[in-house]
Image (cartoon, rainbow, N blue to C red; front, side, top):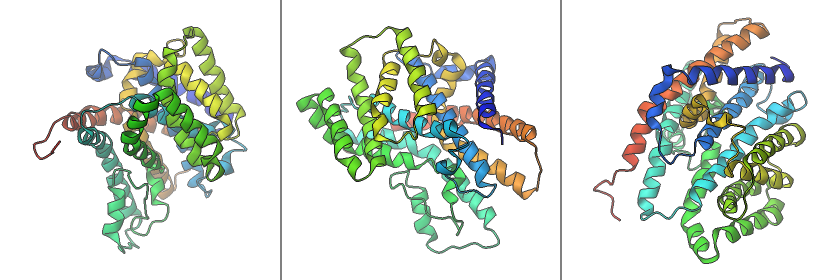
Length: 380
């Protein structure tokens, strides 16, 4: 495996290659998704978030197949920056959800949850089906079918329970897709809390509500479980950032510089992302983004905006690519040097991204449209 500084150079090389390839006419079909009121730099941001999460899991998956535990802490001494990338990506995804939905006021909560289900479930099911197929072939000589239907229930719950039991007796089968579905448990928790949030928001205002939740997370919930406190606080920061641009204005170039400085701090200085003491830095980072920071236009580049649409597919499917690649190498007893492994990984990543543009175009879009339909069997 590449040492950290070479890994980061490879990452920047990938960004350049991806920007050129997916900004080309070959992927112009993704432009059909353009909307008049879309916030392009947030779309481009989504790609980068999924990208850094994928690279974080790339490293963990490599070491997992070389006998190490799937653990940030074990690899942190040699790869401190890369080990922070995954957490940073997830944190900002949570903030984006808080930003987008904290002001929601649906005319029908049934329709709201229908839309969320049709948005989340289809690619989740694709990921789960491939996990089941992988696990079946890995365990084909030693299949354990105890409580199989109960197991399948959890693998097709659209992430609501956050539980992924072993498939066919394969321990750590949740790592086949890099274990990414744990975040959906928190997303659903946020969605299910929205009716209460809306009542409180209408009584005291979103700004006061967000600050109150941040105080509760910092001084009370963190005393029992710091990770839980931080996850909840990220949604509150997203909501806070929705209101602050109405109160203050910052020049865009200051926002861009602020994004760079806060990202560098969180990746290179912070000991871990899910630490309550870094909430002010994370809040500053997201506020700079919502005030228009686009990294001097980088987040608005066509290729990244296109892939931003496919970011959910990238997030849920990248683990399958890394797991499948490493499993194939192990089964075939292939011996690859660093250069060969890096080239193969680059090809696999590009193929994955291309597939994800197709899953968005032909699966996600279809079910997003279905989710907006008012079915006759649904009562208001």
